[in-house]
Length: 95
Image (tube, rainbow, N blue to C red):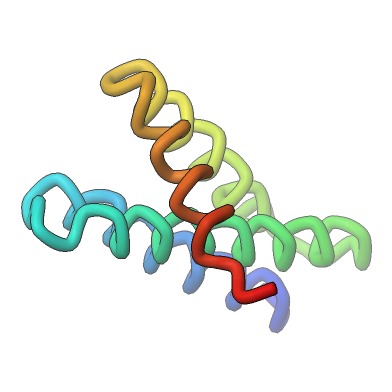
């Protein structure tokens, strides 16, 4: 595994843990969901970079699968949470 694959795995783990903790700690739900979503997105970008550079190993596909799977689980369990997340992200811009 090369550098991009390692970083993609690290960010995927951070994102998955944040998603898991968001349901355990309901007071920090929005912050943990945004942190998890952002970390998974960054991990997925690193994963695409590893795919583009044709790095060896199959672990570079894990962050993409984790992003899609956790997104599917979030939307299936609580469909309006994704709308809440996107609204919160839109309103938190400082433009």
